[in-house]
Amino acid sequence: MALGELPSVPLWKLDLGKLPGPLGKLGQKELHLWIGGWLEDRAKRLRKPAFQGQRHLLFCLCDHYEPLHGDADMNRGIERVKAWRDVYPKLTDRFRDANGRAPIHSYFYPGDQYDPRLVEPIAEMCGLGLGEMEVHLHHDGDTRASLTKLFADTLRDLDQHGTMAKKDGKFAWSFIHGNWCLANARRNGTACGVDDELELLYELGCYADFTFPAAPDEAQPHIVNSIYYPSGDAGRKRAYENADLVKVGSARQDKVMLIEGPLALSFRPDSWKVRIESSAIDWSDPLTEERLKTWVAQDVHVGGRPEWVFVKVHTHGAPERNADVLLGAHAERFHEALAREHNDGSRWKLHYVSAREMFNVARAAMDGKSGDPSGYFDYEIPKADRTRAGK
Image (tube, one colour):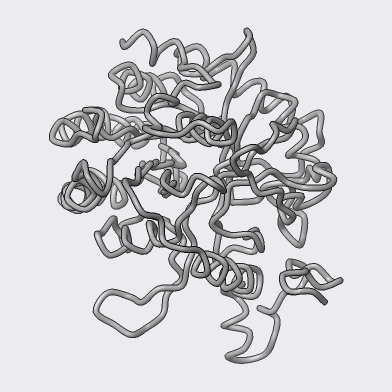
């Protein structure tokens, strides 16, 4: 078997968590799904000469923004959204990137939690230029037809607030799957039900998926730290397991592009204990300068354009404990570190970007564009009406 070739039995079918004793406990971390891909990726990148010259850090925070997370009632959901509406503009007022822009939050809003009282305050922040709205959805046991209706209802509802981008009169959006279960990823078939979900997403106007990394979840693909199209039959279960990596000169494909965030093994702070770094932000694992170093070191970029470094992290920002670390002192120190280490104007320029803008920059890189990526934030997918209008 050639280096990097997957075994005849797909790795995801091997449930090592069922092994007895300590082996089973280790198997529950699902390391076998991605550790080989990560080691191969590390070796490949280390063989390449270090880039010489100014680099651009594209930082994108994708929020699985669920006001009713944890079975919260509507009143609690409204209070959670109000906390963000009250505090986030004040937090971001202190910080600017190389283009003078404040931090931008990508709100992947769950269609299954739609209520105008929960969405409109977020839409207001989009109008202030502090965020953009995309699609998140938890679903289970669906067929292609039932899932099509769920997406259509979600897009219709969110569009009432002017937050859905359109291209050529049709919705243009990006996606994060609830419970990570893109393309019916679970071994037991729960939390989705539609093998050809990636094909359906593209048909309905989805241009990019931002679900991964998912480690230590079983949905995690073998491919890590990459920007790619699924290769082969995009209609099969877990079609994201095979990649056509994008690079300068790559042709557009009639498929959803997958943009992964950093995934690595790293050391815990002040310890020699190894951890899975999956770029997930929560109250127990907040934004820190040390984590930032690991994210940047994974060197996610479009092939042939290493000076544009993509760092996409994710969170569930609505619950109170997570909101505390995203809106408080942890976030302040993190943005200070971003400016200090990656916005000196010489070695680095920092760019706060939305998910849409990150996709547009990737597309521009594929087309051979270079220089300052900020010129390509609206390269292919335009802003939503609310964001464009600024209200």
